[in-house]
Length: 159
Image 1 (tube, rainbow, N blue to C red):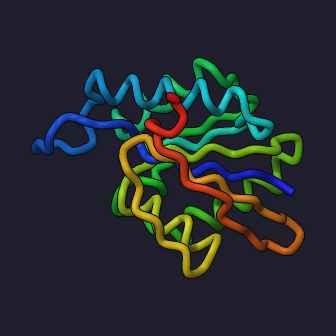
Image 2: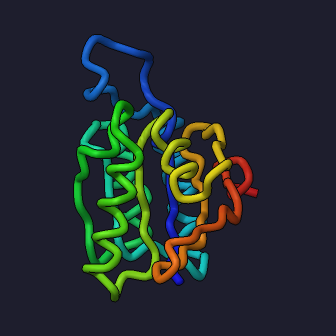
């Protein structure tokens, strides 16, 4: 059994002409840091990460991974906001089979694809993610079955 953590980036600057260059606000950095600290205390600490190439996702991942060093990390263009969730999950499943030592996978991405990623793994589950929210999914690689265990937001983990 593996754990898949699908996380939306923290609060970002308002929309601009080059969406991929938007950066985190100070609040967004604090949200990501809080989630990183919380994850570091869980039995499913990430040991592998796939991260959108967009600046705000890279910044979020940097805050989270500062508390959670990983064995494997990759920037993945399949998990941008307009990405195809089915293709992304196929790629993730391939990586899981190629990296059997990695038990917990963190994906840092954007709305709406984070919701679609959850739905691809857990059909019928289509959560709306607040900034820096993380869906925790139990994934059975032999059966390719998954269960959404919880959706955590920074305000829940800071208390």
